[in-house]
Image (cartoon, rainbow, N blue to C red; front, side):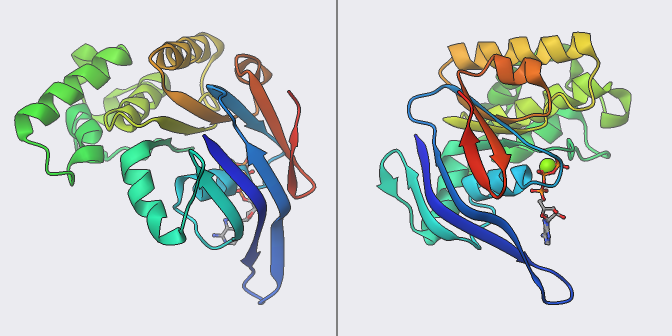
Length: 220
Ligand SMILES: Nc1ncnc2c1ncn2[C@@H]1O[C@H](COP(=O)(O)OP(=O)(O)OP(=O)(O)O)[C@@H](O)[C@H]1O
Ligand SMILES: [Mg+2]
C-alpha cells in the first residue's frame, strides 16, 4: 500500500550543521495489515511517520501510494482522504468535550452536522467510549484519552492509521485493551503502521521493521 524508495532525510541544526536521519531508507508494507516500527529513542520513528502522512515533505526519494508515485503536491490531499494519525501525545483540546475533540478531524470537510454527529457516535462506540461524549479531557484517564485520540483518527474512515507509541504511557491492562481495539480495527479492514517500544505490540503485527543506522531493517 505504501512504498518508500531511497528516502534521504536530514534536519538542519541551529548551528547550520546537517543532521542525517535517513541515509537511504526503503520501506514496503505490501499487503500487510499491521506493520510495526521499532528503534531507539531519537532514531527517527516520528520523523518517518510524518513522511508517510505527508506532514513532512522535506526529503528526497520516492513515495508510492497504492502503486502511484506521489508528487509532494498530492500529499496533503492524500492525508485528508486516506490517512488517520494517532499522535505520540494525545493533543486533545482541554476546553472542548470529547464529542468536539473527535468531530474536529472532519470539521473542515463540509459534512452536514447530523452526519458529523452520527460519525462521532460510531467512532466513540468503536473505542468503547459511548458514554463519554460530554466529558472533558481532564476528566479522562490516560487510556481513555488514548481511545479518544483513536476515535478522532478513525472518524474520517481512513484506509491507513498511523499510531505513534500508542501504548507508551499506559498500564498493562489498558495496553491489552488498546491492542484488542487495534485487532478490531484490523478486522474492519483498516491498515495500521504502529511505532512502538513495546515487543507485545510489535508481536501482533505481521510485518516488523526497525530503524537502525539511518535505514529501516525488516525484522519479519
Ligand atoms: N523539526 C526538527 N528539527 C530538527 N531536529 C529534529 C526535528 N524533529 C526531530 N528532530 C531530531 O531528529 C531525531 C529523530 O527525531 P524523532 O522524533 O523522529 O525520533 P523518535 O525515533 O520518534 O524518538 P522517540 O522514540 O523518543 O519518540 C532526533 O534526534 C530529534 O532531535
Ligand atoms: Mg517519536
